[in-house]
Image: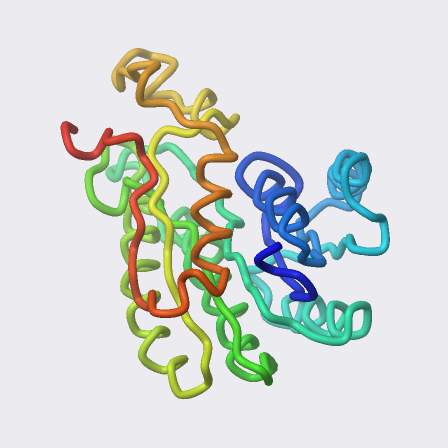
Length: 246
């Protein structure tokens, strides 16, 4: 197992890509702190994961990543529970839909605070507290590269997250912390199917271009693992080739 004895924090872990990532990390021997905003959904995720993984390898922590004090508490709880911290997966994200002409600054803050600043918070504390080195994996989106109407704050946040990945990779290298990103395309999650552009037909999704959360999780595990020891500052497309013809 590639991650035997390692400890990971996964934000947005109650479902979708986050839950699939936690499952994949556990399968590779890691112990995992599941982070999310609501304890009830985290409890359901934990119960699901415990069908295949030892209960003592899983912990939960409520955390709104937009608030640094909550991220700090999450990290401290992880260290108390497991005694170390090696992997951070910045998966928490929100997506709102509104024309630019109708947006106000608070619409941008609501997205940026989670999708970008939240990632910064966890990276900062990784740099402070991952004493033995480690790996950070940020979950961006193809919207960072090619986007659509109504999602300007989300697209901007995900593009900025790729820039943050590069900057953090530079600063993390002396600390032996690698920082990379995955760039998922259309993934079979509620975020995809609840998209008003998809529902209205403004964005057409070819079924062949829809991946599973596990497809992204596999890429995250690779970037977190020793197999990616010489991969740093990269952005790995996980989109089934969709971006190539958008």
